Image (tube, rainbow, N blue to C red; front, side, top):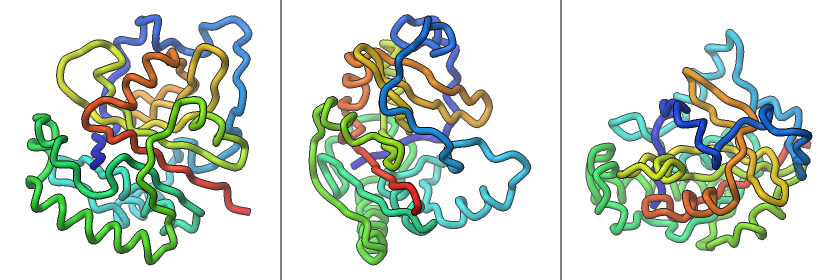
Length: 219
């Protein structure tokens, strides 16, 4: 199961042509773009907002958060939420990665925590399903009323060794690229383009379990 790090990875590798700013492209045709979602914006002088998020989070000792915990938080905030993963429970294969052993208290501790989070998700009517999305199927879910948050191996985008989980919302796509917002607290970047091939590689890497959260706009 599904662990992503804090939003602390710098984008110093953005010169890589698989990950470039939309502003650097000529007339990008972004399809299915998400607009005006208040919780996509970085709050300004709203410490109370982040205090509430932190109070709802069940982060690991290293500060990392399980994907399903993000789904739980969105549901606690009143959104309709769906969570999809290859493994709803803790995946022991992920503990072959140093990241999981460093960030968590180990398999048994993680299993106990995930069992509680899953129970809370069920109480909040979060849709939970073991499923592996094809990329085009995933992108077809995105519209102005549905936001997809995915877990990527951030290092895989830049052909780096190791694993670094990182959550990103998909904000659009076209024939060649998937566009995401990188919610790094120190250097947030909007509308970055990742080639579809590289994006699919990063979201299917060991450690991600191909996690997807679908969050629906409040009506």
